[in-house]
Image (cartoon, rainbow, N blue to C red; front, side):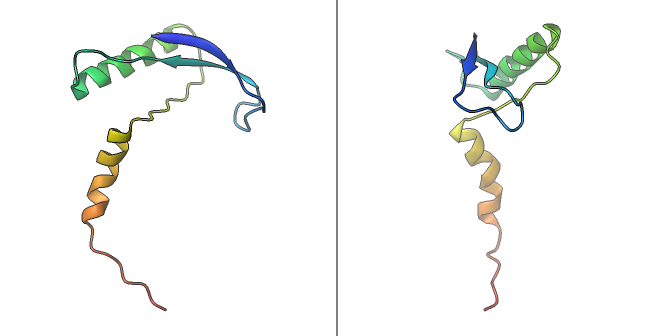
Amino acid sequence: MLCRRRCKSRASKTFRSRTTIQVGAEIFGDPSIEAELESINLMLRSIELSGINKTTLNIGHAGLIASVLEPFTKLDKVSSYS
């Protein structure tokens, strides 16, 4: 797990600060969704135990986005009126 401070050139509208703490993790050797969920749960629990109250979870995995959007590709196309 990687944890570091990140300084941005402009303050975020949400956080009103240019400095945020960023945490990242990567799993090697187990491609299962269970391993991904365990890693996310462990990270969130660690952040909670550290006393940080406001947490934003940003998942940027293309496979996850594709699987979430996949059911919508099977819907009937809605015709538009001109």
